[in-house]
Length: 326
Ligand code: ATP
Ligand code: LTN
Image (cartoon, rainbow, N blue to C red; front, side, top):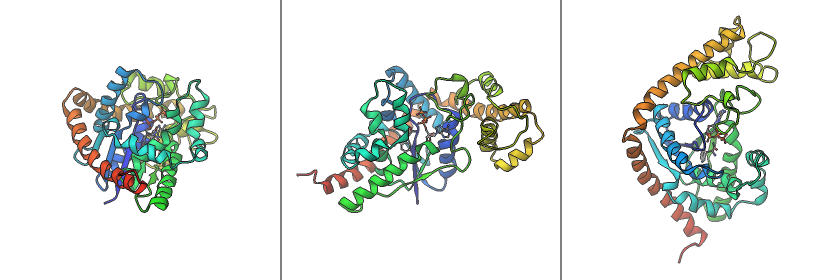
């Protein structure tokens, strides 16, 4: 059976973008694939985190995975920092990655240009991500388009190690949704909706209240044409709303365009808000039952043991080949 693997870092509250770009894909593939979804907490500390908040967000992430429909019977769910092989493998991979290729990562360039004290971890982060993927022989990595370059780096590193040391790693492929690979910020629809955005009004959080969701969608930036149709270049705001509706209703963009062709922007926003509220309320109801239950610990304990077994076997195999042995 093919294997999928992904993770959503607990560096902020998960957003509608995280749901559509990554979690939703995992939910639909979990019946046909062996599935691994973890919490990349080591990735979160590439930028400064408040320890108490980080701890809380780790729990929230797991509760949200489950509330969004990730089935603990079908998935291995674990916390990255509880499995030492991720950081260990990352070191060996770092020693097999060139400065040139790591320096090409556009997310690093983007994020580091906006900050003063940038950690070395933020620079090497895609290599840790490669370790996350390669430890488990993942065939597919469900992610939004922003992560495609990182999965490609993981492929390059896997091929290099396989050439140098013999066949060790499966070469993974990104799994990017056809629609919804990049949900845009509601206030700046040419920018990705992001959990670390400073603009609170542009991002819908999975745990936002109905009132906030409706307010944010009602004030989404559109254009002055007044006609509803999909045109990413010239109508990024309206196209983003159509994309959100399409992903949550499972209708194609064409079907959604047709449904809304005679609507004005106000009415379109109202229906988009209705479907977002409906889906997120469902998730939030489940979340409330999970967040204070034992389920999170149970799931993470089971996942920890399973993931360590799998990762250890892969790590030891490479270590031996590299000559890190007596
Ligand atoms: P940040 O913006 O703070 O770096 P992020 O929201 O991109 O964080 P994660 O939550 O870790 O980061 O992303 C988890 C997954 O969700 C990744 O696969 C990412 O590609 C996807 N994702 C995040 N935002 C969006 C979005 N706006 N549209 C589609 N997919 C997204
Ligand atoms: N880098 C990703 C999170 C992440 C991930 C992974 C995704 C860490 N390790 C392995 C897929 C597979 C992000 O920032 N969204």
